[in-house]
Image (cartoon, rainbow, N blue to C red; front, side, top):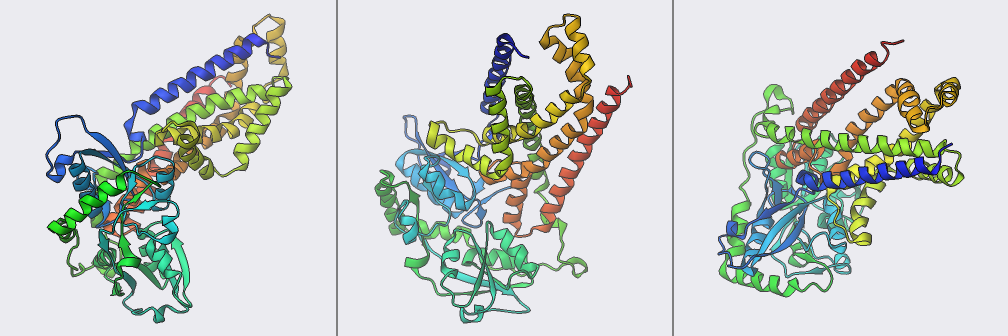
Length: 502
């Protein structure tokens, strides 16, 4: 039975660990969303003498040539939208910071105050206008049908009865809803559409013109057919929170750019001519040469993945131990709390917990939690629910005679648990702890949905840049496998060391 002194010790230890965790989250800027501060000088604008105010722009950098990650160089987010944003913010005297996230999370980021405006080839639809304000249009794109050359689909009428892929939340997704007789398959990213099209799971994809050019350049078996452009339907605009004071000033600069020809100049820079596809070796649609220049960028994600796994595993182990002690304490409120906690975190999806912590924390608490900290907290809290049962089982598996002997010798409770019970329990639960660490390492790929640039996020960047999926994903799978092998090797060494006394 734990007395009040022992409970106080546990509370102080837990608080100390949480403080340390917060310090770690602030100390590693790689844990934030893939955000970069861009000097207005890069837009050839003279910097004002006084310190600049900062604006955060949200974008989904998987849509070249509008926005993509320059993975072959310094990993900077580049594209037509980025150049326009740099120019406008430079003219207005702001410093620009770019926050990377999935396209379907951009509106939520605006509503929760995570970003000041959004530029991501976003159309000003009536549905979106109900939630955000838009600037004037700065570009009009053409919807384009991309299909197999062996089975070309050239008109909207030809899509009737076909399975058509779209990017979830995009203008093309909304447009495809109006195609009579077409069945839709909605995916999160453009590279996913290409993979589905190449594998024959969909008959066609609806994308915009510039993206279609990139897709067909990188995939020789694909053909594209343009549909007529409509400014009102396909015009891209800048999104702002409702009643934002920035709308009028941005519109003023856009009008000047239109009149001076600056918008046309930027557009010409980013819209390439269609290229002849390269020959494929051995007639296979596999070409690892597309990864040339990208491998160093992908390998940098190993550090973030390992850091995340270490932080979440340590937090989960400490908090899981506390929960297990609550469950065996004999104090009913603590038992009820630990049981309810375990039930909630084991009964709800981890992805839901992750997105709730990341998006709800700024809205409810006013704290802009870094992405890596949110990921470590979500995974640590979730892991603790499972580990608490594992640790409790290990403690209960220790022979009762050990406790009785320690009590008879007058050994204090804390010393008994640390010196006698826990070491014996550890040998029993070590395989389960290793399995949990392996699961955390592999599940770290989920944190890419909130913009943490770990291995999976970097693979997505390469897929978006090359419009090829298999090569980058196979490399990342191999890296994960090697990391798991290393982890299990260390675990076997530790297990052999602990069992020397058997």
